[in-house]
Image 1: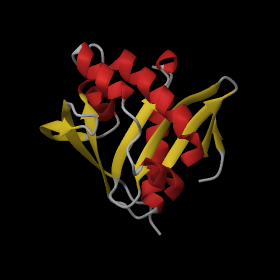
Image 2: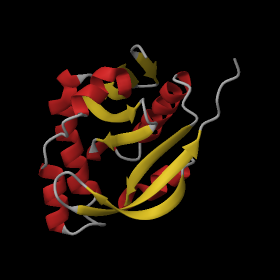
Image 3: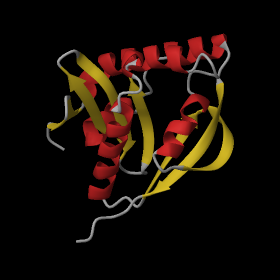
Length: 167
């Protein structure tokens, strides 16, 4: 994916050099978006942890899509291109409800289809289940995700079949 525009949003592929900005946005989104679904101590530990060891590799592998505007970074999404797992979709908490997350998820679907991935999978935080369901994901099971920061997060494991383009 090269830089592209959809309305006022510009999309580009992210890389390891973007990790600090992405992680700051992620932490802010977790603190605001998850506070109504998880205990304060869990949210604090979760939002304060460092990026996982393999994160730079996912980004440098072309799996990160960033949404930007004149104001800066509005959100990002990460796809593990080897497994079809959606690892992240985060939107600046001040930009929620404007279609940024939906556009990012669509960009990941396009990336996955170009790679020949037929299904996407993800662990949805409880506050994000409705967003993913509206995007076409279906729940497979409730889970306790053992997050690398040392907390168990209640979540829903979900999947979505992709409509592959005809060749």
